[in-house]
Structure formats: structure tokens, C-alpha cells
Length: 564
Image (tube, rainbow, N blue to C red; front, side):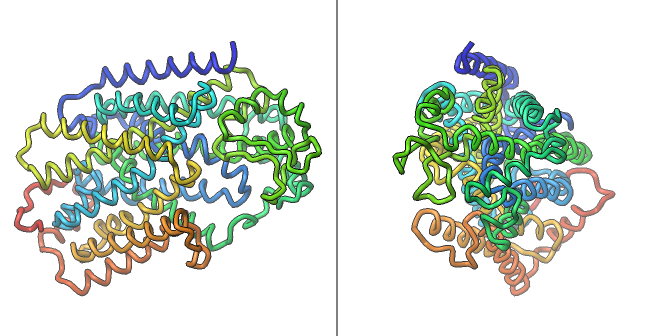
């Protein structure tokens, strides 16, 4: 069968499994809809967390960016994996012990303020919508190539699938769907990596082939011959300061991502939260240690397959023709010599490769079997859809639980709260689809913006909320607004308004680090200049850090008069 036929079969089969799981896991109450009834086993939650975490940015785009950035692309590996460790060890157990459904719920109750809750809701929606836009673009890219439809149509198909199991099953349906999606995406990522490692290095395990084979030395030599910097040369594409700031933003942004944090509320207790964090880290490491190998293999194969080839030779490459039809791979014989050259200068470069196609095209470039190529497409869809569904639940819960139930209608019935949650998922999918069709950058770039926003808004108030009982509502509100406003201003200005990177040439992807620092400073200063939190809130923070206290802390008895 052809690649397209195999893709159709595997995608349909995987979607049938996802939809079946969503139907079997359908819920009728808000606890099941928002936190999967807090009954997910630690191993399953670890797999679901890994699928939630390893989005289209990890599966589709990360190796592509490493492939083009070389050494400097390690920012994504270090930032994302380091950030998950930070989240798992420093924040997740305390947040689970706090016993709340969402990050805005934690912020609202810890800082005894509906204004703080509202600011956190806005931040959660900003972060989640930015993040989900990248997932929708990933879905569109996969469909555009393997079903030969345009990107817009691909995004719409993905929206329909996500809507089904997100609206019907809520977090319970999403959790068990994500377990299946992790199995699909990790198998799809590893099989071509093993095969290509054997072809290029003679070593079956890609991590060992990348480390002990000579592929990096060959790639360095090829890049220098073409006028590029060596693949392994540090800071060839980004300054040292920008690399540092992007890495920090990705790391602390991870620790503030609401859709990952909420996964620790779906397990029965704090102990299970710790175990599920360990399992998730293991499942994540399998893919993240493979990505650098795939990046180097793909870069070498791509140059070998396309550089200095004649027009006729390129036209004979079926995979190149089909990717060219999507608009994500472009050829232009600028010098009229009948050949296509890959050069570092934009004016003379005749081969334009979208970073987001590297992983998906890699098996085709290496001439692997059609079913392997199709499996990668199914894996890319699994990665994008699993994260998109988790993000949509965050948006839904932020509005339905934190705004509607906690502030607008505290006496709303279970059925009405569930209905509002499902309607909000529908609205969120529509908005996410628009940004998936009109994205502001590559998948991993868009996701990096979301991490920057999370770093600048959530991380300081969560850390201080747990470890500094003196931090009060005035400080938290001022800090979140300052950090979020500055980061949005810089990202929008640089990416859309032509503003220069005026802060020491730090890119839009790294500016979240500066926003985070501003948030910390403003929160601490304002908290010390205003009255301390009430005595019961300070006692609660002390109890939260008490290792002998294992029961989730209930804050529903906080008097409404303390909430502004």
C-alpha cells in the first residue's frame, strides 16, 4: 500500500480507539469532568502526563529546531526536561496536597482574593490558548501532507476529534485517551529512529549511534562545506544570554503550566502524585533522549537528498513533491543553473524547509517502509491531540469552575456546572482552530511563547504561595499583572509590530525570564509594603509544608468576607 493508504488506515484505527475510550469514560459530574474523579493509578497518570507534556512541539517540532539550530537547540531539551523535574519535585506534591482542581483555584484561595483568582484565570487562558494554537498547527501539518488536504482542513478535522472526547469524557476521558496516545506516539517516534540509526551509524540504538557513531563529525564537515557553522558549535545561532534566558523561561514555564499541574489532581493522594511524577519523567526521557539523534540523522539525510540535485532529480522524489504541495517545502532555482543549493544566505538559498516537517519527513527521506512513515503521522497526531485536549480542559475549568461557580453562581447545580464546562470547551476549540490556521510561528516557537507567559505569571505566585507565608493578595495581584503585561507587550511587539529585541537582544522566546524576575520583585516588595495575610492563611501555608500532614487541605471553610 502507499504511504497515504497506510496513513489513512492507521489514523482511522487510532481515532476509533480514542473515540471508544472517550465514550466509555464519559462522565456525569464535575469531579469526573475536571479531575477524573481523582482515581487514576500512578503509572497510568504518568503515561497520561507524558502524553500531555509531549505535545506537537516535542514530537513534531523540537527535533526540527535542533536540526536547524544544532547545539543551540539544546535549550528545548534542557529547559523542558529540567522544568518537569522542577515541577515534579518542588511544586506538584504541595499543590496536590492543597486539594484544589485548578491553578486559579489555588491562587484564589491561597491569596484569599477573587481578584487574584480572576487574574490567574486570564493568565491561564492566555497561556493555554497560545499553547493550543501550536497543537492545532501540528494537526494541520500532519493532515496536509498525509491526507493531501490543506492545513486549514486538517485543523478542522482535528478540532472535531478533540471536541468529541473532550466534551463527552472531560478529564476522565482525556486521561485514558492520553494513555493510549502515549503508546502510539512513543512507538511511532522510536521505530524510525532505530531503523535510521542502523542505516547511518551501524548502531541499532539511536542514543548510542548519536554518541558513539561518526554522524556528528560527518555533519560538521558537510555544514562547513556549505558555509554553515559546525552543527556542534555552541552559540552559532543564538547569543549565550539568549540561550540562558530561553532555557530558564522554558524551565520555570514548565513549572507554571496549568494543564500539566492539573494532572497531579487526578490521582488519589499525594503519594500517588509523587509516583506518577516519577513514571512520567521516565516516559518523557525515552523520547527526549532520542530527539537529538533524530535531529542529526534528519539534517544529514536532508542535505544529502536535496543539496545540489537537479530539477529532474528532485521531481523524481515522491516525498519532496508531496511536501512541496503543502507549501512547507519550497524550491527555487535562483541562479538558473538547473540545480538547487542549500546555503546559509537567505538571498541565495534555493531550498526552503519548514522546521515542522523534519520529523514527519525523516522516514520518507531515509526511504523506510510506507507503514513506518504512516506510523509517524499517527504519532504526531497523538502528540498534538493529547496536549490540545488537556489544554482545552484547563480553559474550560478556568471559566466554568473558577469564574462561573466560584464567583458568578456559587449555588449552581452539578448539571449546570457540567454544561457550562462543556460549552466552554466548544468555544475554546473554535478559537484554538483559528490560531491553528493562522499561527504566529513554528510549533515549538508558539509553545515557547506559552512557556514564557506561564513563567512570567504563575511560577512566582505558586512558589511564594507555598514557601513564603508573608506573601499577600496585593503582592500576588501586582506581580502577576506586571509579569504577564510586560511579557505579552514584548512578545507581541517583537513578533507582530516590528519592535527590535531591545532588552540585550533577548528573543521573544526568552523574555519570559525577565517577566518572571519582575513578577518576583513586585510581589515581594508590594507584599512587604502592605498588611500581612490573615493568621489563618499563614497557618494554612505552614500546614501545607508539614510533612506529617497527609490529608488534602480543604479551604472551602474560608469565610467569603475574606474574599474581595
